[in-house]
Image (cartoon, rainbow, N blue to C red; front, side):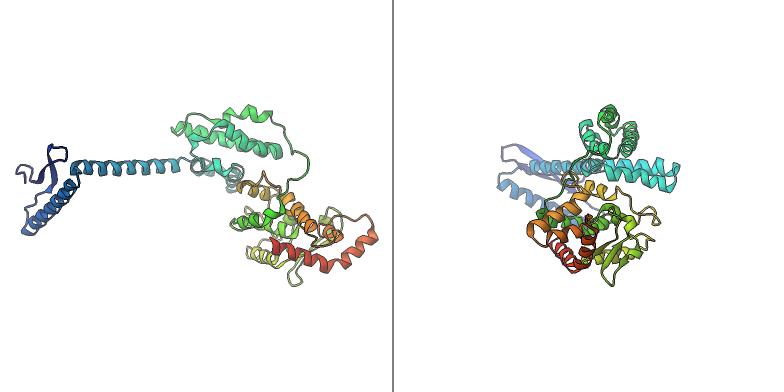
Length: 377
């Protein structure tokens, strides 16, 4: 024990022959109990040090290595926390809450942040803001530019102000949203025409499992579209008065059908479960109401946006997934006769007499077809 500092000291010869001293803690004298505990702790420390020396380990070096490891762990934890706090998503939401919400109506403020969450891929949305480069951002927004150019312009502008704010607060040094402005404008506007990309039907069950992990009205609407092989507009415009849950059918009125004729869709057990889930949300008159305003139907971009969030937009379109994949599966597996498959897809029959006959006679076959499709999915 050193008297000046009142500390216990362990003097030893290190494995390399050096004479060294190692502190074992304060020598407490305030009470008899404290003094006894202090002595016991010092003795245990000395015993551990002797064990290390016997193994050829310098206890001082061991202590230093442990301290360095703890400091490195703390530094790594702080760096991780800082990275998480400066992801594009976190920065955007802080800006939205501090600047956008106080200056906009609740509806406009919600649209503002939703446009970013829906159109910026997860790989960028959750990346540190200073790691996002212009080429990656351009590649992410190019599909939006081709399909919904006005939305793309708004998303880029909103990203631009977010990056400007991040630069001001020292989170990054370059604004990639500004850098890509001209390059983005050089890309063609409007939807690229051609065949709809469709997911191979063999991949549909795995896709449905992933889809089931998604929440929200868009996910339910997409699964319902898939199970019914219906067109996007038909599903988005679906109203409660069209659903006969007891009979297990959905009657789409002629006014809403591409062919101008009423279409009866037979609902599988899973499709009816989705209907009942949506009924609990009490949207009127829409089965799939907008989350922003339940008096309005879901946006026509909602399901496509969901595909983007799932990083599936390069593999399929909504039309391709819900109709083309179904048609390929049914035809290649011979699940039903071609006429039945065409009737289930509401493809217009040029012969009106034959069309009327098909609607009447294919009811059972169409129900069996969609039930088999639901079981496959």
